[in-house]
Length: 514
Image (cartoon, rainbow, N blue to C red; front, top):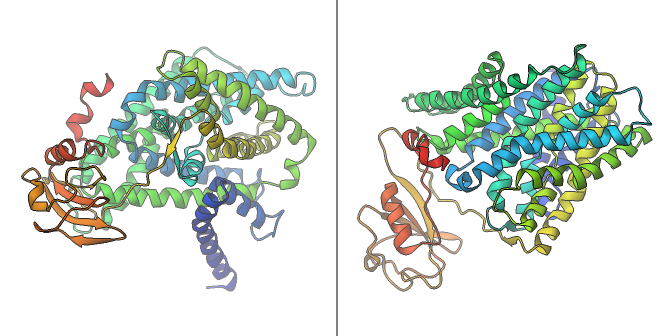
């Protein structure tokens, strides 16, 4: 192994380590981790330390391919972590925001850009501006929730699941809109009304392909393999097959991957918990690689040029003050959300990696002034994260829509779902006013079939037996069938509801769409 290759391998490890440590740095300085990854990329790039040199035009194709693969795993991981019971109350509003909201944001921002620069840039037409607006039309979940959790707060009511659903599901719509506008820009025939039914086919077909692959994936994971590690290899295979199959059918692969993740995240199969953690790690790995690579592509000096700085500032203001609020208020006009909640949703439209990845598509296609478009998108993403990211939580507190964030406690052991087994582990917190305080486990008389395996007390765990006295602040780790855990929750812990992952028949229950 040559010295240069060894240095490269070690440097790659240092970058990954920096990405892990950046998570702590992000929380301390109230800065989304996305910016830190991008900053590392710009620092090691050809216009920084010169360790890794990439040209936006020459290397656009491989970076675009890398970004496509990375987005697949990021979207799949986001879908796996989406609990259908949680998002069901805001399902209609979230879907409207993730589709119509993206379309309206692109429309309003494209019109603003075209009108503002009508007298300055005569060399680009309205389709160029609509393509640029389509690239930046989606929000970023990773950037937004890094700020929320880093501040130790959460959003009240149904705002949290709404923004989670929108941020996790609107990237496919932005990608689809980008591809349609890219075809219009590069095609001599321009817009055709036949593209409208094609758009619906891509959306419906992508969702159907993802749901089908989720069912197929569940079937494969229900088989027994001799080596447990093969289940995680199977998870990677399902993501790649899902995206490839959807694209071969001329549907939207990003949407298919996300829907596949949602489907598999709400069904039972072998080693589901391990798959979720594995894909969470893969998603973080992809984000570190992707954001760092995108940062390497950028020349910081070009971002400060007047031809990028002026339109970047003006379009950022239009996006934050006109396009995003207009799209949100129109999309949620028939919803139950109040004016204050809609205002906060309007401001919580942080941009992230997806627009920068999508901005490589015009570079690959050779669109005129695509380098300028890429730099403008990069500038607008940084502006959105800095301005909206820093002011989001002060605005939430000002609107009285912030509440304390309760970090999720982890059970000391992970119980994997296996075929034929119908049990689960859940951790219930004993409040100060609980009727269980001062009683032994024997006196508590939990429902038959619900077994307290251990008790979290302070920073450690104690074994559970019939004579163990329950104290306020204890966390009871209870094992049992889902109906037994629900009974425990309803009888003793109504504020700590147990949510069961749904199996295949319940997932298709029509009641979830009511």
